[in-house]
Image (cartoon, rainbow, N blue to C red; front, side):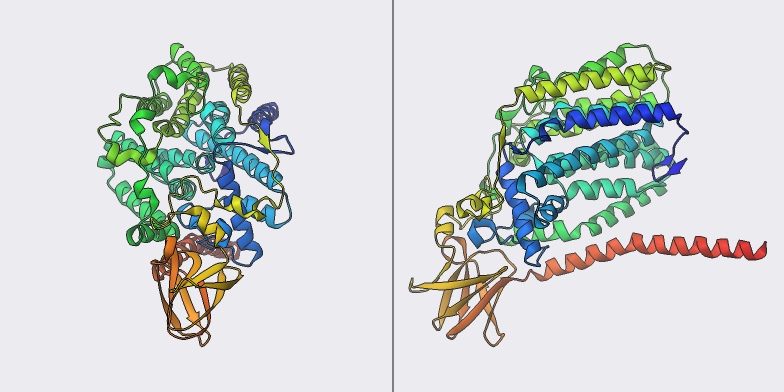
Amino acid sequence: MTGIFGKMEDVRKEDRVFTVIVSCITLFFAALPLFSVNCINGHDIDYHLLRIEALKTGIVNGLPFLRINMLFFGGEGYASSLFYPDFLLYIPALLRSAGAGINLSYHIFAAFCITAAFITMFFCAYYISENRWGALISAVIYTLCQYHLDDIYTRAAVGEFTAFIFIPLVAAGLYDLTEKDFKRPWFLIAGMAGTLLCHTLTTVFSIIFCLGYVAVKAGTFIKDPKRIIKLMLSALFTVALTAFYWLPVMEQMRTLELKYTQAIFDVDYEKLLIREIFENKAGRMGIAVFLMLFAALLIHRKKDEKIREGDIFAVFGLIFTLCSTGLFPWKRLEEYVSSIQFPWRLFIMSCLMFSLAAGIYISKAAVSKERLAVTAVLAVMAVSAVSNYNRTEEGYYSYSDDYYNEVKFTKNVIGGEWLPLSVTDRDRLIKNRDTAFDENGNELTVERRGNRLTVTAPGSGYIDVPFIYYPGYAAVNAGGKSLSVDGEGDNGRLRVYAEESGPVTVYYGGTRLQHISDIISILAALIPAAVLIISFRSKNSSGGSREGVA
């Protein structure tokens, strides 16, 4: 049988049934806390639910792709969708738009991400190991590993747990590059693009892994330099495909002073002791993965190509893990790496590496006893998962469907890294959310409609309107004439310069570079579609020709 992940061996019916049962049990334990009418809690849950609700607001207003979300700060707006990619958050946002409750929408979304991570790991691990049992073991460990579950249920780290879906594709893509003549470049493209559109930091870690893996396999590129060209073309395509996200981010960071520049994290203080890696606490790897990894290593095994591949993953996993400790010079490099905030974020890559290595090792060590090995792995990981759930104290909270109609909840942006530095008082933003001020301090009533507002200008001068300023805002008078705007308003507000009295409409229209980046990404997305159409037509025409000859 041949599929998008390559040739798959014929499997006996009983083995297929066993695989399905193990998969269902794994997903059941991974999603166990989701079986509740209340919403799972977590450190950042308020912000991510607010992001979802902001997307829903845009969708129901016919503006699904706003970069400045209108719901935040009672309508003042916040560039959440510009700086944080919303790629998968449209799933719960669409559910909310269709009438599903906040709690249910988020739980369906979390269950989807858990399932998708299991599936991508299974097929990517199979592509690398060419062993169904090894792939199943890798998927079980990956899905139930402590760091993954804590990302979902303790930290509510949406960016990270969605990235778990795509990083297995990065590993499979690199393996395809070096061992399969890069026959399936979409692995690496989809892996890197998907990761970038989920979590920027994990993308950085993935790039580091790519560079390290290519260095280890340098001999392959020396023998066949064409692979380097293929890799560069794939990287260029990925850059073009995701231009709609990263180009506007870079533009805003270059043209606007943001609070993230003042966010200083003591990463050296957050580094771990080696013994802390194995603890049953949030931000730790836990002991379960290491128990199985080391148990497999103790069993005598014959070195072969797959074992050597497992060794590479194990070594990279060890490097990422140890870099979370004081063995990495966090203090010395703090100026350059403080954006990581917590060194243990590197464990997302450790989970990937150790899961792949353990799957290869255990399947090789348990030849003819694969079912027993899979069952043992599942038992250990299930016990570990339940232990994690019993340890967490986050609990549940029931969000009413009108929860974010309460204006005070729309300012939950954690550190507010993407607020302009000129915003000094968040409470004042909300207090004056429906009021503009002229240059004499007189209050002017505004009327909001979607992502637009209208205010009547008293005459020549300027008006500070209730929008937090980001480059891309525009204003027009009643005659359609464009007015000058900037970010000099009080408390980070948008300032509009009106030359005459009359109604003024203000809206976020985006920058020229944003529009160009959208076009680049759309054109890039059309390329594979065109290739598929041409390939399909070519096959049909060649098939028809053969029939005619016959």
